[in-house]
Length: 344
Image (cartoon, rainbow, N blue to C red; front, side, top):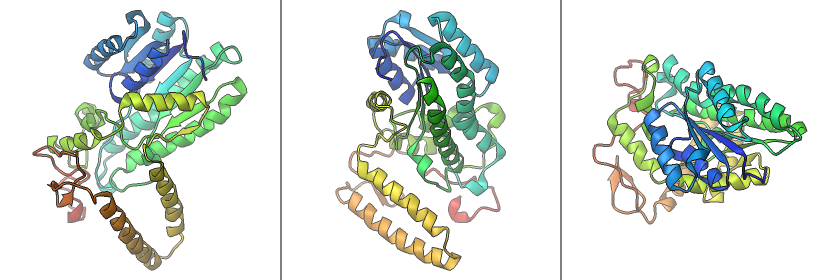
């Protein structure tokens, strides 16, 4: 897809972070911009930002929508058609949440919330919008589907299992949609950033009341620590420009990390993981020992120019500021009696 002017874009999770960056960049290309979010105040602020960015007010449509509710999402699709005269030509799903804790401490609510937003809401969007887009635009004009996934889709982590599992599934889903949409003159792109300067560190504040039973240790301190990390991430507008280039060139996967060697290393580690799982437990323990020693040396090189600041005994790179009162994230609730004490 190369011609954006005069067409319609809908960005789920478009009221802040990566989604707002996408709304700005594609709006700047002359698209009519619909943004969906469950937070009404964030939608109002996003509209002001889009206008300040130079997008005409009449081309902006904020929609309050619960992406996990199919009736709400269908009403959102109807609203876009009512106001802009048709379904989106470009559909970008970017809403996402995350929480950190040992997978063995997870509750049903932890999985239902993270996978509900990060995977099943994506399924909802595809099933609601894609048929409309095909009917309206197949072999008539350009249209495209994109989803913001994560570098976490390519690996696994025992303290972010629901998130990594959902993102791996999203990637696979988008590969399938790219193949499926080709006969209609379209395709799909999945964006896999490593870190974004976004508000996802505050996600726990917006967890629905009926899904609050978490097995993870969550506090203002853990969220402050996450915010300090995400503040070092790629700028949302820069990220959106990279996504635009990927869509224009019909890339299925877009890897926006500033350092390509990061992704080469990640892919190599995927191969290593596959290799390691074929070993006996004793062989795997030795393999892990050697791998961890190699990673320790990598980290020492990475922080060679680090400042003198410390957090939890770790040296921090220059420019990273961990707020006072921040707590390490990724631990279990202290009262769970089956959890290894080192993971609490």
